Length: 374
Ligand SMILES: Cc1ncc(COP(=O)(O)O)c(C=O)c1O
Image 1 (cartoon, rainbow, N blue to C red):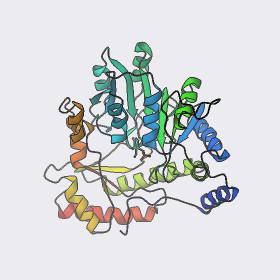
Image 2: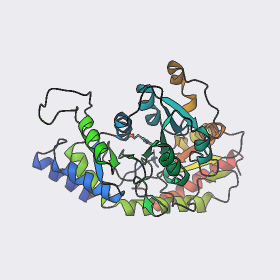
Image 3: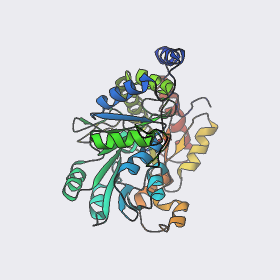
């Protein structure tokens, strides 16, 4: 593939940091690098504590595991997101209450969230889709009033500010991913952050097989091994020092795509900003307006010209596995379905050259023309 969908920026400083950790021999979850990364990352996103884990999906598993939730409790979440958001709920016997996206920004509709609050709602999971912050004010207010937990999934929004405050600072527990395509990467990796000392202790314990401090191999609780290695943390710390640069670069990439392709009225981009936040453009997504061409058609044309793309998320409310849990067909989320049907994203990696954006835009333009999307 000439233009892979993701080219990460891994610098010689990153390599040196990992090498140094390797040479120290302290390469497991007990490495001091893990604690250093946790402290630095939590500070960057406005939280007191960081609990580094093996990936963003496990960060969500851990977050839900420590909240005081019982089978049958309802959790509100967007339909238009990754399976990692749904998986912990199904595993714990919680009831997923899906909300549709707002067509103007692709985020979960705040109005729909408020409408779906019921006496059984115990948590809301917000996801800042593709890097644009959800309008959190009314959600925060209702969470406070009704004692509902807020889990903030910031896997796509490292360094994004909502009304000047960092995403990650709003959730009772907030989660991040450091997968290779994220704003900063540790290859695989993730983190829970919180400012609640009780949650911090519980998250730390469950991450580490729920070992008891005094009687190490006698277990009172069922934990997980979700530890991050020292090598990953060393890379994470090195990448974190460039988070703001990565953010600017992503925003420049998006600006260029929008400048190059924005005059085509049959394609739509996510907004670059709204009144509350600046989009991080974790990925640059494109929605086709022409209802005769779905995203698979143009994606296969682009792939054959060397441009890597990915489809959008398949709506959670339609996931085939829901039938096994008795939740099939419970909701209608037409916007989420439309996003999946007509949306795809184009190369947006932190290591991508801006000149490549021009070359890719030309290819997209000509494919659009040949498919009548003009
Ligand atoms: C919103 C969201 N949550 C969670 C995850 C899962 O992260 P990971 O791939 O590190 O498990 C992702 C991954 O892309 C994501 O986009």
